[in-house]
Length: 308
Image (cartoon, rainbow, N blue to C red; front, side, top):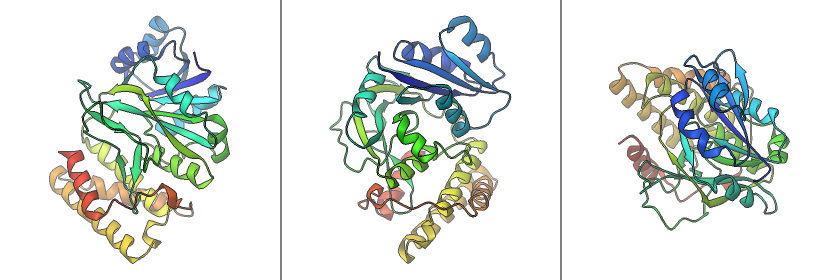
């Protein structure tokens, strides 16, 4: 068993934990951070998984705060993050830990498969020049010809980090309640000289959108907050006229389409709140993390595929 802390944040995810926990118990020290669940999660953990360490919040403090608390509750040199809607294969943690052994590798990405395990959900994340993030190899046939080119950072649902690297950058940014925390952390790690490696043998099944519900209005607003926050924090609109125009047109289009489909302004409201929250917060963009092969047309195609 690798010396690893496996951190699983959860919120009203009892049914998901019943499926997730048996797949990770025995692969490392499991730490569940309960974000104020009211569905019997605490009772389940006490009755069926007494070996799991539990950190319980009285209310939902968001993904970043929960993960930071889980990281602080452990002391292993390897920290593995798993979403509660992921079922991990037996070699998951060991494969991620192995990938972290290379020099200056501070993060590692596993492979998530869609239910049925015939296609890839994601193999880490890549970002374009506007810092829009895309799951790599999404919907590719499995097993696919996976590679690590343009792998910027892991997805938070199947990730491993060196504790040393996390401590060097201060962990996750708790201003982000949910969404893009993994992208933000990955960018900060890259900016301080840490790299991301792939762990193609670290596989698991991802149910997807199980916590928030597919395109719920909460999901839309929280995701909009994250996008507005990231645009300002990383100065995307100052990265040249072309990038600024690309970002503005994209965000206007997303807001307009969602206003029509959702019949409210959740996407716009979230972005405005995120932009205000990032006032005075600045971080550099590590150019090595950008996949310059992704242009506006390809980014639009990927967005359409994600919501299809």
